[in-house]
Length: 420
Image (cartoon, rainbow, N blue to C red; front, side):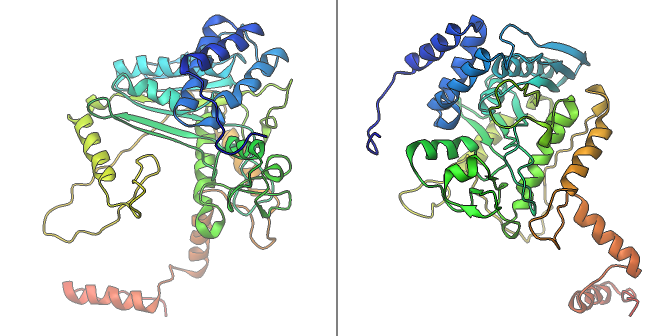
């Protein structure tokens, strides 16, 4: 094994050419090989080594074994001015995803916003490569994909959802841009694989073994165990990452009619069709308030100029530096909000049935702790509402009642009236 730090430098052009050579050698169409090679090179160039040449063998093996159809082309099943439902026809993931993102871009330039959902796709590499395609043309780009079960939902034992990445890219001024590309797990499985290949242990909180226990052994996570959702354990808000993973599943698998959740094949199962679902959204910011790129530059500048915790570290945009404050002034707040509504019926038929199925799957998972059942987003609120209905009202702490009555006194109205 090579010593730590003993690395070899390969020119970017050679990285791309090498990937093309490997892919065309097994029969890939030239266009598909070029797209996939560009994607893999971009991943390593941007520092996402888990999804660069680390994934080349997978794409090669999928062609050799016939897991993907190297000659298939994606087709449009249904479309409107601002939407499209696409069948990837089991073609390799990168060219399918490129087709879909470019379609969303064209539609967004006409309609202002567009969404494309695709079924029967395959692993598409880094999600950021697609969102950046929109960003390079002055649009906001979003890309999502479901994937093989790897995340163990909060309170459960069994991996049920993929790392289900989320990417958003938005243009700023002078060629600058915001590019978010993140897994909804604590870490991408590829990073665990890299650690295993380098003989490294993994940090606490990345994954669990087959017993659901946190482990530092990457092999125990890859084979029988799984990844924790973003946030880690329930006590550290891991349920938020679980919720995000299921949100991606709704946009990708449920909306497109692809496989979803545990129905997706195990990671790198040769011969079994992946039938992944993916979703691509493009938004033209110019149909909203003028000056978008200037405001993007401003907010990124604010983040980059924040005082770092240590002098040797900067505050990276991609990893989000949050500043929370409360401003008490007499001026009106000018908050911004965004609302998006999607009609699932313009995509694959049967959306509500698939929604019911995936929620049932989650709720029926064996819990890690018997008295803590596995829930889905909305269940805690529903349980609380049922409790309120059963007891005839909403519980408030006496201190809160006292505070509310000071407000009543201030505006000279009757005090709130509890049942007891």
